[in-house]
Image (tube, rainbow, N blue to C red; front, side, top):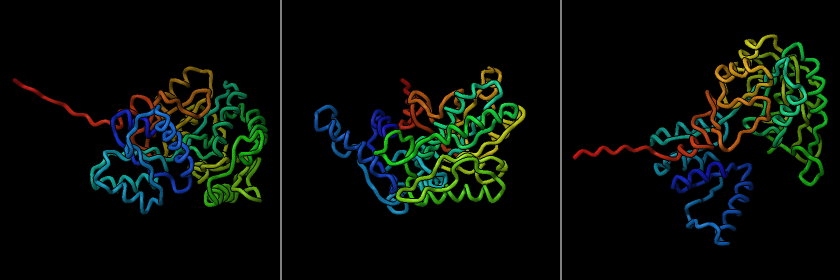
Length: 326
């Protein structure tokens, strides 16, 4: 919420937030902090400048995105929802800023620090139960270090603790809904049916809560669903490659273009990744998470526009040129 509301307010805009029908409580908590700051006299924000509405996309969302009032519609969500918003916004030629899905590839070269790569990729897969659009979604490892990497990677994934919010040492919790749990399970099951092998995890946990264990798959074909579509859960396929050219081809072979990562100490590969990886963000030897000073923006079906930094702030401005002649 902060990355959407703050720049809009700085630009002088009023804001109407429509929360996800599945996760409204996070927004409510954020707004409670704003209300507390107003009551304490620490924030001068007139009533109505920031409003929150809840409901389903086909009712509340439809009304908001077809209204002639908004100057911009900014949304984080699925590709399908983004396409629907674009269709609705086109009626009034309303500007859109859309952060949509991702299928982030991680490339691990033979000269990489494997321990650092394993730590970063595991953290980037399981954060928020894998329900982040810039999470690591697939891994490509150079064949000469594939076995060594996999030994470390599977062991690290197996060691990840998941559970309820009151349990000690938990690294991630439940998926957000039964539908999401079924989606992740279905993708893993279909991958196995198509020939992939599960090295750890693979089955939803019985009992209360929508928990899915850390899952690693190998042997999935490049054109398979699990290598091409966003999983949005703590499961990840791994494949091997021979050359950096092959790695680039595999990484770019998807419809998304949000985030990517490269693990190497060779600056020649880093320079090539800078221009040849077709993603809005590329992380080098680090965890998949952006900083507020950057510009979080996707290419291809991962969206239009973006958030954070100078460019994210400018999303909320219109340009105007005045010509004066005496």
